[in-house]
Image (cartoon, rainbow, N blue to C red; front, side, top):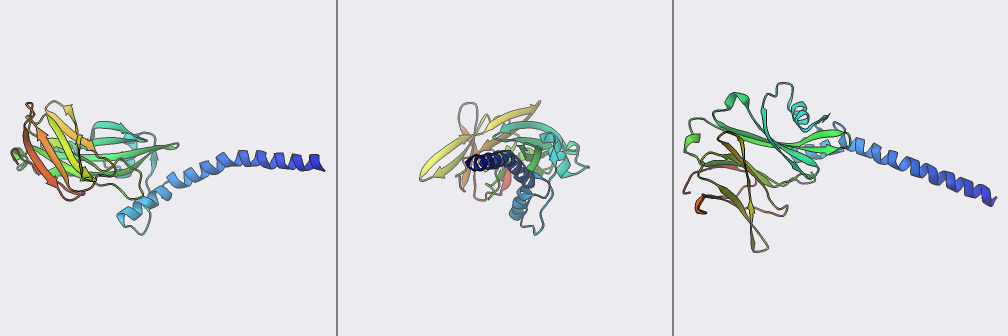
Length: 232
């Protein structure tokens, strides 16, 4: 009797060990599939009553293209690996003479890549010549895993050599340096990932080669976008 009970116990243990990975895999699929739990969380952030359906793709670029649709024609100009995913920057091909920039965040899972979030702006060609840089702010998302808050944009004036974003936490001022990347000849973009606890207001500060502050702007809206001029 004792041996029989022992065999039953071993059989149950073996079945649990076998089924546990399958259960985990099933949950991960339910979370990541198009219209699954992850998509439902994003839908709630957007205020949608029905879940969106974000497909799984085999690359970060393909994830963006499949989510944005078959007529997506923007050009990928830069990408940056982040924890568990990829930030991609794109530019509309038919507007290369004006300042337009789009940021897309895709996340890697065991099934492939999924689009998570994005945002962008476009500045009219007739207006952009007077600006030193453009910016867009992406806020931290509730219940969605993403490397936000962040800011990004185009640099239009070559005298800007360094950029910092200043935030305050517990009465302490924190300066986070932005990355400046030349994506093509004469075309600079910038971006910065802020601490998860960073809160509005932010202050963008631009410095020249001598370390002189030549432009700055206080941002009071975490969803803001705009432009800076020299001396402001």
